[in-house]
Amino acid sequence: MKSILILSDWYIPGYKAGGPIRSCSAFVDKFRNNFKISIVTSDRDLGENIPYKNITSDKWINLYTDTKIIYLSKGRANFRSIKQIISYETYDFIYLNSMYSYYFSILPLILVLLSGNFKKIVLAPRGMLSKGSLSIKFWKKKLFISLFRFLRLHSKIIFHATNIKEKHDIERVFGFMTKIVQINNIIDKPSEKAIKNKEEKSIINMVSVTRVSPVKNILYLLELIKNSHCEIKLSIYGSTNDISYYNKCLSYLNNNGLKDRVSFQEEVPHKEIKSILARAHFFILPSLGENFGYAIYESMASGTPVIISDKTPWRELEERKAGWDIPLEQKNNFVEVINKCAAMDQEEYNEWSLGAYNYAKEYYEKNDPTRAYLELFS
Image (cartoon, rainbow, N blue to C red; front, top):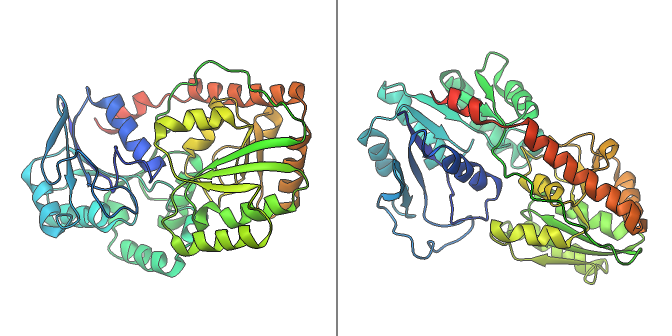
């Protein structure tokens, strides 16, 4: 049985980091009987100063047969601990789940390469090489990538892209000779389609499940709501760790009469997201870039049409009546779509709700990644 050491800044019971946590935990749930898995992560959620409750830090914990995890405390996530973990056992593969994390990606990568014990290293950038992501803290990331290329670290590892767009992003940054495997994310099967009521023609309940951060383009979203001429109730569920950006959003909301139309809600555990999506008419997220977009998929799987940018893998939505993927330059188009959604009667809405559900169902049936993951880690 092959052994895999997984390093990730966050893991369950955390949920505030969103997609990366779901990607790692889904992999472990799917393949814990196929591989011997060891997980190294931090003992607190994104943006939190206190550890998880009922979790023992700095000690290996057995999760399942042949699967164990260690939650490193803030003081123990250091050079010595990471080096000790990597050197203590022999692993066939090391699976890194961030592009820029010092303790959970960069340091492990350098330690392995310096040791001369060349294990196979697989690095999943998790969308961090998209143009939208790179535009945030541009010079800091540019400097890091320049150093990464100078040391030729990219030539010594395998990149894991979760879609063709991310594959192109990796090639754009590190060149076409970079070794890349493209394997889809592991996702849940859509449950049975439920009927969703749209009782009043002029009122729509919209939801966005995302971090309040520049890459998610929340200020842009508030501008769209301000410019729409219909009655909207938008609830934004997500972490607010970028306090400066969050305050800008609050200021815009308060200064433009949006307090009755938009509300910021606390981020909720993943298990509660389905019920939130089930109550919404539409999901909206004009982000600068999504590596996958679990919330987008889960929205469509719940029969909730989506209004998103064209910076995600989810495309050609309108022709399938599953939603809209709109270029960010076309702000008026976004507004027109929002107004169109508000004007839908129940019959028309049912068509779009069913279209979204069928799109997600078809995606699930055509994109089972099991065999590809088994080949990668074999």
